[in-house]
Length: 295
Image 1: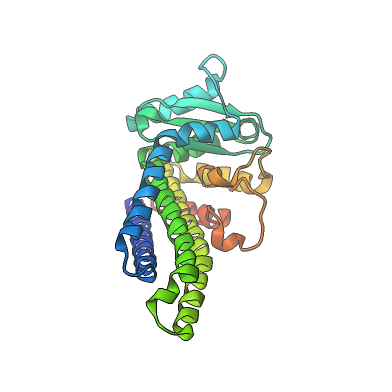
Image 2: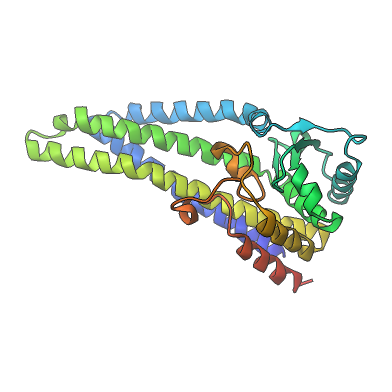
């Protein structure tokens, strides 16, 4: 169990380090194409970091608003409150605010910069589909995201994606307007132009793939954390099986927050495997069965 959690944490940081190296390489290339003006790369990265900082403080409220979530009290949702409160007592985690989304598709997500400022949101379809045992597994998963500070990791990745997008955009501009200054012949200018355009086109796809890969690792980690908390990985496995059978796109699904939900809220499309923000449910279920055999 603990090895599964440690493995997913390591994988997340390995991917982040690779992403940083890629971002730095493209940034250096942008400065080189601009005539060794390295301050341009620094300016781009500082701007992206500032944008990510702003998002860090408002992302939780944006997510709740985009989902159409409504806060509920203990009187309005006693079953919901009881299950979360029991998990919080078990783990010593502060009680998060609880929200509900009116949607028949069973799903849930957590948000918040710290455990003290966290919130858990579930759909009405989740209550109608799952038993208490299965709900406890799902809520343990969401509480795992909170305890593991997954929102912070997501925002770090978000900042890197923004920076990479800006650098790629500047790269193609330098290739068009600044490449000629790097050489005295048309052949050199053509090489810079082609290289800049290719890099600018490929960078967003790489960023999307890396962002999805990190999100998938955090989902595995939250599954393992839930199993450790409830001591019942089969309960979450049963819940994921029902999500697989009854899952459907949300009425207010939004691409920017798709990675937050426990199950992918979007309609599948082309390249869904590469850019999917969630691991395949059968893979997650199989891992939970393996974890269950270790208890």
